[in-house]
Length: 159
Length: 159
DNA sequence: TAAATACTTGACAGAAACAGTCGGTTATTA
DNA sequence: TAATAACCGACTGTTTCTGTCAAGTATTTA
Image 1 (cartoon, rainbow over the protein chains, first blue to last red):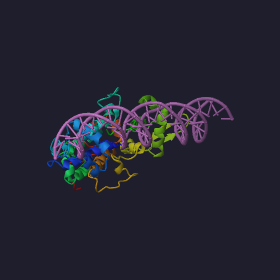
Image 2: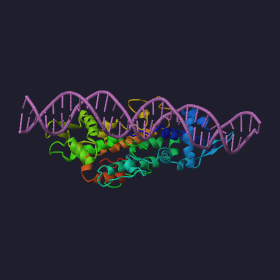
Image 3: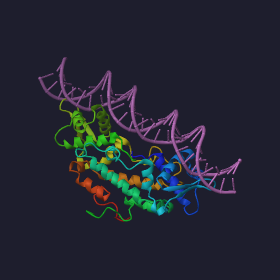
Image 4: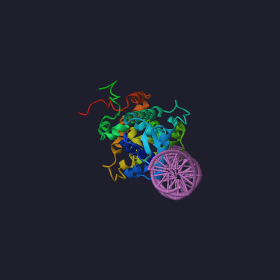
């Protein structure tokens, strides 16, 4: 359950590839395709979305390719996925585009909201830079349960 | 993104309804259908799965219906969803049924694993009982980012 | 035993989302 | 101008989702 579509997965991997070349010129779609084993045609779709969102920029012509609009430290996994798959919305009730008919009577509303917030916090706390750095912070997050600078939890009712 | 299917959503709501009647006899499918606005036919599918998993029991004949196999304190949202939608598996790489070809070369593997662990921890920490109790703990979890007894994060690596 | 109640099961089907391809276009550089 | 590389929209087969339906089994009450 709670699967991520391939667009989101490939998108993050493509961004990782572009981030690797940060500071040393554009990275071509062909390069990304070869490194990450994703077809060029499919990558075009994905990178187009990210470009329109302003997360990456493109350079046409020979020697061209894609570059990050910002430093890898300032690009979160959350915003990448947000562009490619829309906001976290465990239920359609919580999807900003749809809306809920009977919020009050729905006992599970708060539950899904809490889960969604939890996920969002994780994704927004995780930076592209973290992927570049041998996954140390990522591994730590797996144990801690949070990707925030300091544990978000554990302030109230702690211990 | 990361949507839950209606089966999972309805399943939890059905379980909530059954939990409400805990200690005071079986709850009929008809009752659940009316309270939660889900068709009987669809609920049958859902409750069947949960019964086979041993989470609920059914009582046939007049006056029959469904009852919890255990106390609401001992049934987690995680296990309900697990039966209805399978395990949390952000990517098919992390799905126990599929498996990953090139774990090592996949830079994002750890990232998705961390997210999945995070979600699992949340769902396994949330009990049916919590839903019954006016959602106080659920609301708290929304702020804390964890459903554990105490904040899972911020507890340092060591035990 | 018959009727009523209620669960049990498998098959089926329309709709939506997913995953990916294809053909052609535009801009830049050498 | 020729090569390179991004840009764009339409299209399509497959899978998953979201249910419905029909027929059956088990149990209790009168």
